[in-house]
Length: 337
Image (cartoon, helix red, strand yellow):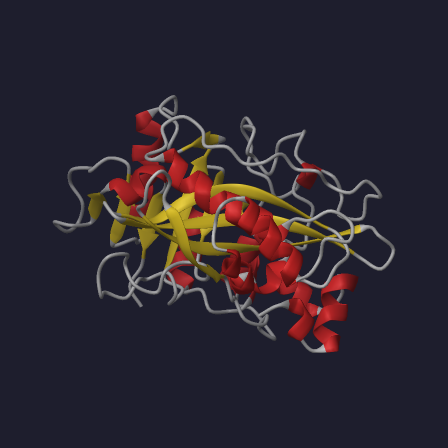
């Protein structure tokens, strides 16, 4: 819903950056201590040139570069179209807040201005905002439709003008059209409130510097709704790899895209990884054996359903490993309840 329709207390909470609700959708910690080791690319949240490498209380307001598809992307313009709509909604210059202004920015892209009404918490009532897309991952890719999961960080100007860090993941739906695919709907993440107390695996995942989680994924873990099996597997993988998670529970389609089967993600029984040891899964320059070994390690850590850019042989069951166009850009690890 637009921030102007939120209760006054919620608006104040977003602006001040205080309290549990904001902590639930913010990383809540500087990026450097929680960043995996390894080289950083131009779209990296850990890059020295990234606005996220500066403390959120810095007087300099972030000015992130627009996201661009890197090498190896399937149908990169589909991702770019989804990202451009989210960037238009979630970032604005001083005085550019509000749904009406967001509609104008979306319309300037040649997209349906009504999409701005679906921006959710990205439309917070702040006088200025900046948005950085960490990565755009496919949630589904078919011949005539797609889901792009736009993982982003956002900075809102607080009462003193200083940026307050938050963020979300938006499931952007598209349909094929000429000359460009059309964005048809937005489904922002809704992680829910933080749990009063967390178990040991969740606490350890949040403290593990070799597991990088974007804001919505941090909020998922803090909600207490992520299965212990998935959390334990993350910790096991961190013993060998430094990796960056894109999606855990919220911001993912409820159904496996193009089917009527429930996805493991909304049930807190899956996580996706888009970068391993500083190398993007989708990048053709990333060694195949790095990604393949990560997939096998995820299976050894308890995942019954591991997807990635290549179909691996072996596995405890006939279908423990799978591959398709959707998983060309990330590794999926699913767990049984």
